[in-house]
Length: 631
Ligand code: ADP
Ligand code: MG
Image 1: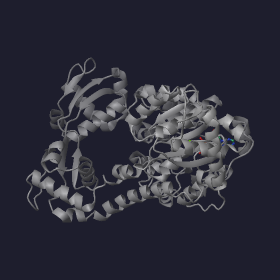
Image 2: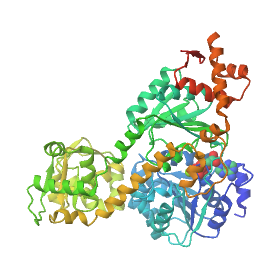
Image 3: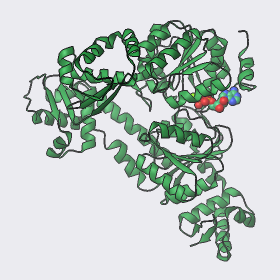
Image 4: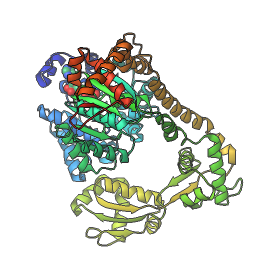
């Protein structure tokens, strides 16, 4: 193929020029170099690998964190007539098998998959047999603990190097802090990568922080003003549902999206929103990564996010088409206290972890210096109530002990399991053939129980553990893998925690080994929350400048459209004057904002600011027909 990058760009996408560093990245990839591309949300990261993917021989393998994202990108490519395959969730083993075969023999140009899929033996084996043009790790910040979306499975991306040592590896993300970049480079073993960072400045987004004791009223007002789409971010599922209901009651087209919504509904709602049948999506952070709707004109944060990284990513979903858009964070006087409660007070410090460790030992009557291999069953609520412990703090302390290998926690204890095979026998045998690790295990299960293909069958994991000489925890894991591969259906009901101590009791000294680590992680979280709060409070520096500074970018020019810039532009006296006039007008009759602006003969910004202040101070209100009236 002899097309130049520009020709490919215009031939497939119909765009006439590259943006930012796209072309440089494409050239580096063409020269076989590894790349770390730090481009803002909406910066056009996909084209950076899709263009060279089309130029090069072979298939481009893309690791992407979300099924929805994979589907979206694969759909887009297919619409352009490009051969692309995505391994979605919920695929049966046979289907995966077939799709991967297509990649080897079918002249496909792109294969998208999740990092969890990559861990499957079958998938690795097949990738090895492919003619790979390059590897792409999209949303690469997920590999870093310093990022805001750490996904342990991402660490397994380095296996790609073992499968094919030569193709270039391209890591892309919109998270640009130094620590995250360094982590990406080391974890993916990028060699002499071409590192490039585009400015994160989003000149068409007006960032605003609005202090109000009536968040709902304000939210309603903003939503009523939009023509296209909006996203409202909240921090809890309950609030997502309540707020969406509130907006609907106010004749707005809204729906909600969170981790608890089932898969089918999620897709359905996303589509309604993408197709403009629903305007406003009220969502937790489960809605987001990679959402590429160009005409989002408003992103509201109804509650304070836990870091500026998350805030900027979410707010950055506004205005991708370059049109003017707003990112509004609503806050009130109690939010700050709440944030501290939610994010900081649940972090156990070293002293707390030591206390919990001692209490655990006392609870189980383990003597000093004693080491026992026994399994202990902890009724968590009982433990907390006996010692009057805060459940969040205690749970997090136990997790810390687990992560630092003092003990091993599992929630498998007395888990009741039922399974049923959902494939036909031929498929199962093929699966056994390609899964050496699970073959013996499956055979024992089949020999032990009859009717597994017909009925949900209750499994005795203790018995299986004896027969297979595998620990019970591994039995559970194996079943989980089989369920994920859609070989079986698997149900389990968990009760309390089960734990095994991994080191002899040495009280404080046990904890001292990783005390520094605990402190660092806590410190990092506190720092992130503090920076977030500082941003909210600082209303004297342009909001874009503040955000960019956080991402290590020096920006001198003010954005001119955030609420800090706007309030400086609008002379205070103008607003006061406008307020007086508005009240005079409304004494006679109700009016909407357009009418008011005409009668005041001043700028829209001044009218809006004046109206907002009057609403805030309860001088006026909005009636059902969107007109202002005196209170
Ligand atoms: P990112 O992954 O960096 O958030 P995407 O790759 O999803 O961004 O691209 C965002 C949008 O910008 C897409 O709609 C894409 O078609 C568009 N885009 C990317 N590059 C260009 C370009 N060179 N010219 C015009 N539009 C572009
Ligand atoms: Mg992207």
